[in-house]
Length: 172
Image 1 (cartoon, rainbow, N blue to C red):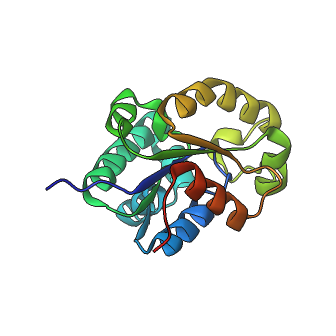
Image 2 (image 1 turned 45 degrees about the vertical axis):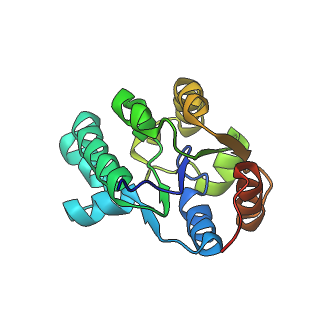
């Protein structure tokens, strides 16, 4: 018997994957897991520290393994790190799963994250960096998504309901 998440959340940093993921899990009566949390627990340091100490390439390799383990071993709601979809093998593993792409525009990103330097990929000229990241990633998010849910101007509860409706999932 294979295990697969009931819902996988993807999207840019700060879009609300963790918050919405917990709400979705609660409403569906299943567990919640976040691969970024898995990485921090396994590595004993923050993602920013991994980026600084080892670089993005090393982080992406760690992330790929964490995502593979989570996809194979979690049957609840799973939130993936913002850049996890850059890996073609990861995108292939998501095929056939319920994947919700939580989207937001740059103004919403500014409000939510402040686009601060604690985000290693946004350390210099954060608005420009965020736009460039999204230009590079948007089509990847969309290519794997079962549903796209805009989070701009919505509460986490509203986003959760829109995701449930889009996936036609019933609450527990």
